[in-house]
Image (cartoon, rainbow, N blue to C red; front, top):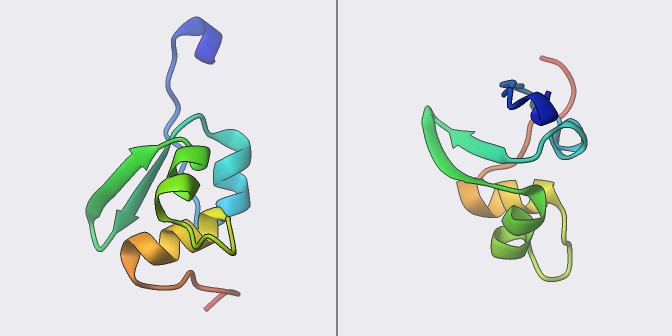
Length: 71
C-alpha cells in the first residue's frame, strides 16, 4: 500500500503488532494523541535506558501500564 501512496489506519493494544505492521505509531491516551513517530524514535525518546521497548516507551509517555489478558 505504501508504494501506491495509500494509508491504512490500524489500531491495536499489542505493541508487537504495532512495531511489525506500522511505519509510524500514534500513542493515544484518554482520547488524546501524545506523540506520533516511528517505533525506534518513540523508544529512543521515552523508553527506560535499561529496557528499550515500545511497551516501556508507552508506560513512560502515558504514566500507565498496558493491560494484559482479556477482561
